[in-house]
Length: 210
Ligand code: SF4
Image (tube, rainbow, N blue to C red; front, side, top):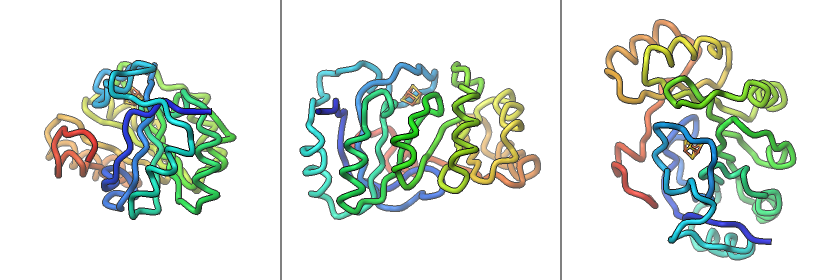
């Protein structure tokens, strides 16, 4: 079998509970979710001029060239390809594996196997209706190994986020609204949540592959 890979690179985790940890990213090609503010639109087509068809063995070989032992399988939406074999091979090779997913798809064979699930909850500014059935299943099945990220760029997003304010690992990520107003509201209205930034954008702006 093989996967369509957009890029493989070694960087720092830019978001969430593992922010700042050295991480190898395997970015898979393909996403049909269509978030309005998506910053990886180049991954949307099933194939792109720079994407590569790669057997899992080759993906592992490229990963092994980096010094890190943590791998984030991201996209695109990585669950739109069959990544069960890749995840199994990574685990057998001793890697800590994160799945970065949209919260729109449930794939328990993969989710049971990874060490951590970083799951988006799509709010109103994404332009995408969240899949509540999938989100509730992830919350219930993986209470100790999932984080949930909501991009909060508008007052409507903040209202929407209230429905999820009971979650232990809720990350509210600022978009483009006033940082002061946003941080004040997170602090006062979401005392259990964590304020999130995108470290990679602070360090490298919109560059790819870093
Ligand atoms: S799910 Fe991720 S890759 Fe797909 S459109 Fe949304 S932000 Fe972009």
